[in-house]
Image (cartoon, rainbow, N blue to C red):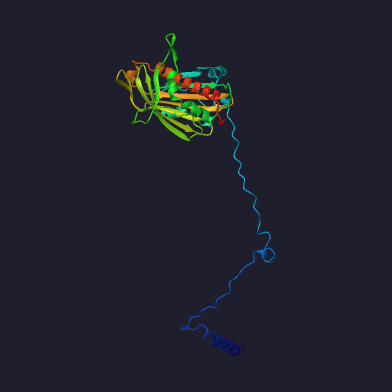
Length: 311
């Protein structure tokens, strides 16, 4: 009796449902009224969990404070005598060959590797120089360095002692428009903003080698400025090429440190053996490095004394 009752009940359900979902008829749902929610009632709703909604605190990221480095932190291996000599006008200077070690090497953790960059040019001879310039006036910054390096026309004014007198190695110094267009152009006025990088071309006329055509590249990082110089034209001596293009390179790194302005330089050049045996160019290159270091030093002194509304 129970099975018969269930069967009858199921049969009645089938008869009731089948007309609503017949194969030949389309079921069209009735349109539903728009649902509008009053935002003001959400907080009062018992279905809202107060723990689900929260106000996030403002996200604040603090940058590490910038701290000027010290000379001793960059060159911790210098002796006390070397440190004192670095603070003289001429500073420290050392000439060596590619098979000999450098003497003034920064702490590897600092990340200043001028020697590694120079060695990529495969030089035969190298010259390193190090100078620490104490401040006489205000402390200098990277913009001061950039403007000191921009006074190309001042290079010719610097001399070196030679045979008991002050000798002008460079008789002319000027910017040129580009590597192809060597028309002389004047130095621009001092910059008021610091670029991330800069490239310029210069021509130096000197008593021995005639015209030297140099490409300079300026790159700027957090702590200092790297200034590299390379010859993009062969260097000739009495019309005889003695140094091919891109075989002379000088990299000068400048950084304001706690004790003053750091100037660290590494120069490298390649001479074939048969030329190196007959012509000793190291003293000549050394004198030119001295010119560049003096030019930069005087440019920084000019920045110290300049009335600059932007400082």
